[in-house]
Each structure stands twice: as structure tokens, then as C-alpha cells.
Length: 427
Image (tube, rainbow, N blue to C red; front, top):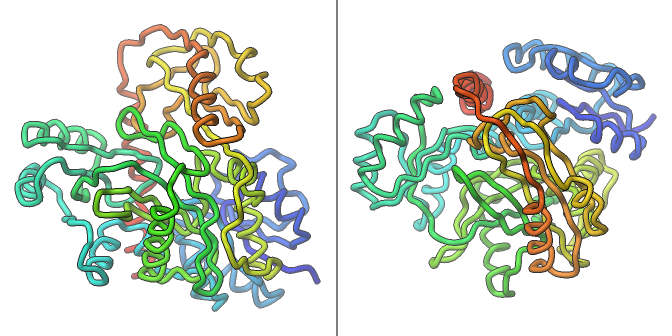
């Protein structure tokens, strides 16, 4: 029989990778996810449809019954919303994948900071807050600037950089407006930001792609460049910091995406995830390093990939740049064909159709689209991507209110509250 895997919330590209590897798969979807899938996405696979965030026992009992009929070799997901469900199943079925203890640390940033403080004398100062007084007291204690952000979440939603006490009230009002009642306060780390996507093999951590990060409005990520232009000593320090972090949180196998700042004191971890990075990092890693992170992670989980022993070399470079448009109703986008058809462009996408409302940027999904380019060096890739993106002209007309988008962001923050789901899963 083919190797059998349980996929949590797979999207069509993951389904295709599963077929390419010759794996037999059972897919677990929420009702919302299955409605968004194309009708022909997985006719050859068994699909289990349930609201697994709210019905954890039903999820475990259903998948356990399927496992008893025909054992799974792995439970796998690359979706942030699926990592808790995958961890519950790994623990319940004894499959050896990343379990709930580790996922708890990676999805609840406050638990992560407390845990790291127990393992390092150089941990980032942090505190749990919920009031304006908490913000000002923390700023007075550690010195401004500071960061306030949701305890759980992703895609840069809700992050507030507070440069002085005078900015604390406005930041607190923004968090309250977004429905954030509990937030993490952290020392602001000076320096450029990078991310590392890695594969771990029984505790041996192999960095695959190190990306330079480009940030913009509201600290949202507006681009990445692979490989990050680092000198050898800094790269070595990054790899050591990555290994120490993954060891500390107990991640021994599979994919990871870790975000770091290169501070004057050396690399410091911002946060980590037991999945591959988003923002087209998988595409760029394949272009530069010849490795499809999703397919490699799935293949290793299913026992179909030999462990890597060293970081793969880079062949050229790649960059992604995301578009920011003036908020309003989209009338048209000028120069699309010129940009899209440039020979260096490997992917191009506009996120909004004519007539749709483009919100002001508060998190990653508010960006107006993206392009990916390949080039011979990191500097060339970044310059070309930024130049091409600048040629696009988004023509919009103003709209009177953003109430609907504020409501949508509140709902998104609640939906992304993995910390609350971790607490529920542990009960």
C-alpha cells in the first residue's frame, strides 16, 4: 500500500504535491475551507469535514478510527490554522511529529518568551499586558521604543511600535479598536530583520533559505530577498541561534520558519512557527536552492526523504515585492502587461478586482498584490523587483468609511488567536 498521510487544511498545491509523491491521503477541512476549494480539488482523496477548532474530541476520534483501519505514517500541515490540530493528532496517534507542548510555545508568544527566559540569560524582555498603564509601565522599565502585539497571530496583524510614552495611548486605542484585550509587550529590537526556513531531522537542524525582510506600513512585510546578503560570521551566528531556539522549544523534526533581528548584540529571535514561511518564500526557495519546502517537509514526514546533512547552495537569487495601493475602490491598474511580461518575473498577482475596495494596510492580506523575480544576486533581485513594482499605478477612488474593514480585522484577530486554542486544547 502507498504511504498514507493525514493532511490538515491542505490547499490545491499541497494536494498536487501529495499526488506527485504517490501518497494516499485523508484530508481534514473545516466547512468554510471545503466550500472555497475547487470542485475537482481532491476527488481521489477521502475528505473529513468538521469544525475541528471547536470539536477537538470529534477530530481525534474520527482520525483515530481511520488510523486504526489503515495507519497513517504522518499528520501534516503547512497552514498556521492547522498546527494545533496536527499536534493533537500527533500526540493522540503517537506518530512522532511535533506535539502540543512545542506548538503551545510557538503559537503563544507570551509562553514562548517565558520559556526562553528560563533557557537564556540574554532573553528579550517581555510582559503580558491588557491596559494603558501596563504599556507605560513597561516602557518606563525597559526604555522606549517598545512593541505591543497580539499574543497570538500571524501576518503582521495588530503590531504597534511605541516610540515614547506620548504614543502609548494611540497604540492602546488601536489595539482596543481591533478587539485585542490581551497583548504582548516586548523590548524593541534594533537592526535588520531576517527569516530562516529550515528542515529538522531528529534534532539536526538544516537551514535552507535565509531571507532578508523588507517592511513598510504598520510593520507589515512588503518583500523578501533570498539569500539574505549576510557575511559568513553573521550567517554562522544566525544558524547557531536558530539551532538553540529550535532545541529550546523542542522542535526536532520537520519544517520551521523563524524570524530574527540582527541586533548589535547578535541575532535575536522574534518568533517561530512549525511550518514553512508564507509570502512566496516556498517559490523563491525552489528558484534559488532547488528545494520545494512543502514537498520536502511532506516527503520527510512520510518517510520518503533522506535527511539533509548541509544547507543547499544558492544558485542566483530571488525577491518578492508586495504592492501597496491608495485605499479606496479600485478603478484600474496601469502598466500591468509591461510588468507581468518582464522576462525576470516568475510570478505576478493582483489581489483585488476592479470595483473592489482596497483597505489601508493593517496586515499582510491588505496588500494589493505581488511579483516574484529571479536574478543573479540578491542586490540585483531586490532592485529589479522594487523597480518593476514601482511601475504599477493603482487608480482608486476614495470611500467614506472603513468600518467594514475594522470589523473584518477584529474578526481576523479573533480567528488567528491560536493561544486561546492552545489553552482549550490543553484542557
